[in-house]
Length: 288
Ligand code: SAM
Image 1 (cartoon, rainbow, N blue to C red):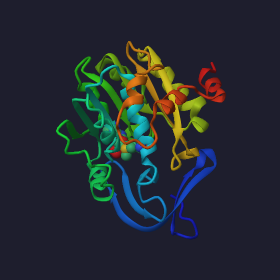
Image 2 (cartoon, rainbow, N blue to C red):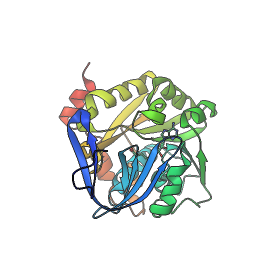
Image 3 (cartoon, rainbow, N blue to C red):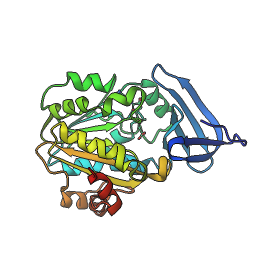
């Protein structure tokens, strides 16, 4: 993190893209070096509390709903009848909370490598951990790569990879052989979703490579869904879905239209619209 002259700002610099993002802060609330990453929490003037891992913005009170709704609901409304869900990463528990809104889901296992993230969420982001005592929720603290390695064949309906960027402990979560193991542990009709970085910065690189690797790993269909995310690089983010013997370009539209969940961004129209990629992305993703 580069301190600005006026240190009442938190700034994340995206050097390779020549851009940066700043939030005016009023106080540093927490700072811990875990065995895996450096964790900080700040109180900001306009975005509520801010969680930072290794200098990268993870989430704020104000806009985390965009990411947590879009990493959970498109995948869950794409699967025909999700009962057993697994989240790799997601230690802030915001994704877990969204998954548990689905009454048909019977069991959710969340595996984050760093318990310090969940402890910080319990102290500084109480709304995100509101569902942690749901009897369907199981929280484990382990390496997600290893957990998937040891998981049984065809045992999961929806697999959510809610990890940090593909560096450090999360690097293994983006590798082809990990994706092959994700394919193995999903049941037929299973859906995997992975946060897939910025459509503006990464379409021709990370996103195209991830989609290719998902297909190499055996997934029959892939779909990238962009959505706004002010605090992430370029202010625009994406998730990529992959289907095992199922088409992730279509979803349960009636269920997505008729649910009674109190959501703030996800709607059946937003889902349908996100499946219609803008021309620049279609071009970048299909380039040989
Ligand atoms: N929404 C955030 C984003 O898109 O950057 C990520 C949410 S969550 C805070 C990311 C989590 O991934 C962190 O809690 C981190 O501990 C976890 N993580 C990183 N590598 C992991 C691994 N190999 N196994 C399990 N969790 C991992």
